[in-house]
Image (tube, rainbow, N blue to C red; front, side, top):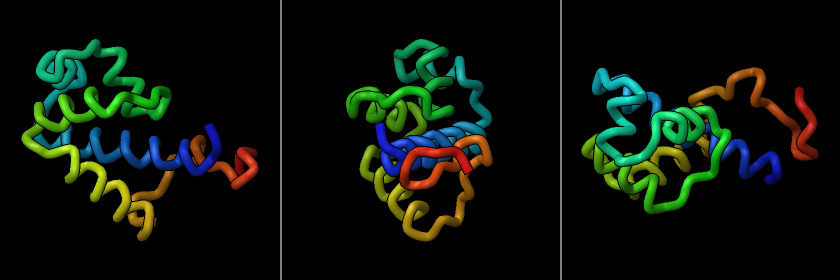
Length: 98
């Protein structure tokens, strides 16, 4: 996975976490609703896993969002960089940590 793909997963995880917290759900509650393991949910939020589209759709449905909303939100944030990456996830285009 290159740095651009990783950055997308980081932003995607941040959006999912933001939506989950707005609903006052724990990772375990969301995982149960989406029919995935809590560990998988945790790894998705931490950008440690590149989930399948079906998994993302179930996560979105569990939070009353559509998959299209997730993609649009992630792409919007990537373009505007209004949600900064955690320092540990910042890498240059060669994949080296900043």
